[in-house]
Length: 197
Image 1 (cartoon, rainbow, N blue to C red):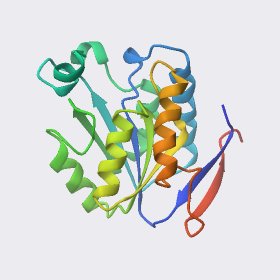
Image 2 (cartoon, one colour):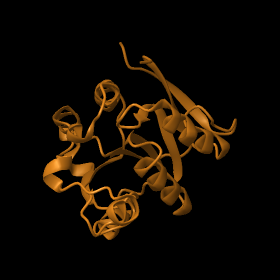
Image 3 (cartoon, helix red, strand yellow):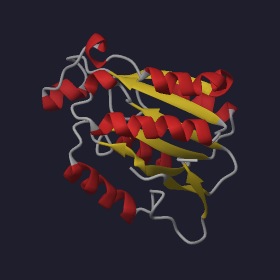
């Protein structure tokens, strides 16, 4: 795990999305380590807004229809307690959404999310969480197509099984589109955050 993290600074009003950080779904130790880094990051770097997204996969959702992947809300559980505790001081700029699909921008909470981002005057979104090749990817592309600067914080995203090839495949796509904290165009400012100190 890296202790120094580059973060983009393309716009003045930023939101941090914390996607599907639900320990009940973790299948390796790696997501737990990344979750600890996410918590440290939240404690170090203030944002203008925060979005916590939690998923479940009922039989009628595309997860089940397309991939035979079905998990009830009780099985997916809630966002990690340490993450919830870290964002607790920001309740006035926090939105929690539930979803039964990949993108945070689709589903029953889509209008609430759009309204929230508009009210907070958000221009830029940074993504953390799981899975980088699935829900993070869908949400990031939806965000950029909706007019937000959109960046994946590479060190704070992964696959819940810790499968490096899936992370690498997603990063290849994101790098091509200059959508990570390690593929920034020269015209975009950046900051370095020390997660250790």
